[in-house]
Length: 271
DNA sequence: CCGGACGCCTGTCGGC
DNA sequence: TGCCGACAGGCGTCCG
Image (cartoon, rainbow, N blue to C red):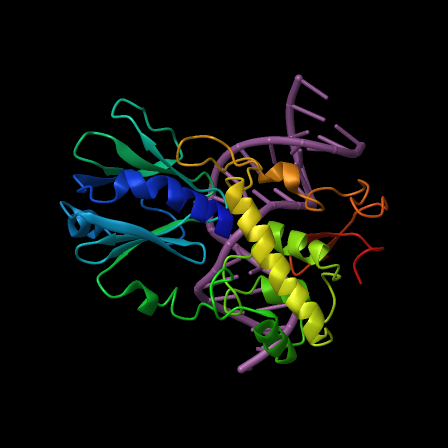
């Protein structure tokens, strides 16, 4: 999926287009996403003005005069603004129609995404209320990660991919941040020094910031709001590079599994 | 409580 | 060429 940088890239692209616009209507062609789109959602948002776009972890929040649309892109979702005459494809599940006829269109082949409307403050929503700190904001640092690590007996990669610990770090950026900090992904999170967690927290921030600067990572589905791919794929050091030489030591990148997710690392550089 | 496995979906790719 | 299994950026739920 879109991880934090892809959602942030989408938010940055859409915000200037959508802010202040009125929603003419919400057209749902297929409500069967991760959770079914509630039948009353189109009525709830119709004619409302969009106050702004925010992001919490991998959730995109479309703030309305009354309530919030919570959008999640799942594994394969992307949002684009399309012209009035653009025909929807089979995986284009809903459109937010603007007064000038343009549409904010969701494409999501695997349908792991979500569209939820809530009248309450979004951070009180069941899906958002347990989320950990934003990695690019205050409250996330090496000391915090170290303290969290002591409370669990799991691989450090699993720790940093847990949204209750820290939001937004998915499989690509977990692998990349662990390579940058020279920590082996399967290492027990309770057996890592404070100093190494400080390096890891810095690496997570650097990798995410650099990915945002590159417009995110496009592997297959993800496109930015303007239809362009993100360019961070060219910067990936280990993700998807099984057998290729490590950028640091020239040894072969190894692939294993932690949890049910592919893990890429350099056995020589990462300990 | 915790940690690990399982599904949910569709598309693509590699091997035989 | 065609088929079939494995795998893919996430994450809530279930089970031991």
